[in-house]
Length: 425
Ligand code: AMP
Ligand code: GLY
Image (cartoon, helix red, strand yellow):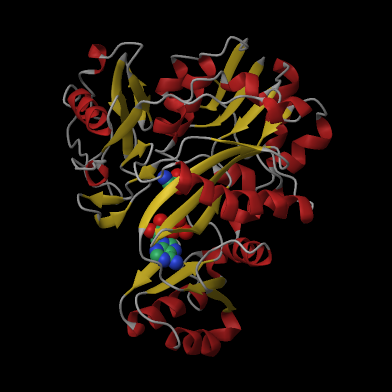
């Protein structure tokens, strides 16, 4: 199989790493890729949102499977563009309509309502409905959850304690178009309190395979304090998610989602990332993502024992249903190393030392790095993801931090509490 993977983050390095182990792989291309992916495949300088460029490359290199990492390419409609042009190409990305599950929070909420999928109560408002938005807000209890409808680079959700702040944020979004087009429409949502978890499936819209679940750590500071980031670490599996709880998630959330696709003729081939929250024993949906998570992928894929390419190549055939997805028993923990200042302003270009002590069996995923005159330097906010297995959760955490200790660059920052809240004493 010739495979083209789009994206350039730690998630894409982890996907490339898993693909590179397949016995079915002939050639792996990554566009644009990163330092890590260049070690296991061929990085290609393509503009990933220029679908004509991608089409030409797919033809030229006889690509069999296209895997799309980030949501912006999916939401822009890569599936709809390529599908009519290549009948045999497997595209791991859902249709433009299905991608609205992530691209429009209003679409996702309405889908959940129609299909009786548990989620927070909400209402949506447009610019001319400021009065209505304020009066709905007054009927809610604090904290107030305000969301821009469209993609806002992970910044579109604001949670505020006072009604004055909430009203001002609504004005910022609707009137001052804080997030441009993305906040021309907003949602006001009931606040849900509980532990969050990320659940992943691979689906062809009819059947699905359940991937390992994970918990990510979104805030920059220890104890979940400070600004939201792309993710500072992750662990898999999540100890409280036993088989009974997974059954509940499948019955109340995953199966109704797939049934919803069938009923509504929604075309979906790819991964779904269910952002869930446990509200006193009941799993509810915070959001859908139409892709894998970052950094969850850096702990989820290492726990998959099966050959992923073998499953992906069958995804649009009758054989997909009977494919066996084997999952390792071990825990996996990933710690993200960031540049000082991230998620706000930071400097790059610092040399990273200690990487030569890592071997092929270590799970080291690059995100924001660059090769500069034979030296690896920092080149982004999230720089590296250091993952490790362990028989027990505590062991995987300790091993990941031991490996982190071997790495150094100026301004290197990481959270020291990844996974610690999940250790059952
Ligand atoms: P999202 O961009 O939808 O993932 O939201 C970002 C984060 O905001 C989530 O991971 C939650 O921590 C939080 N969040 C979103 N919606 C709610 C809600 N209704 N209740 C509580 N927290 C929420
Ligand atoms: N880790 C959260 C995300 O990928 O959106």
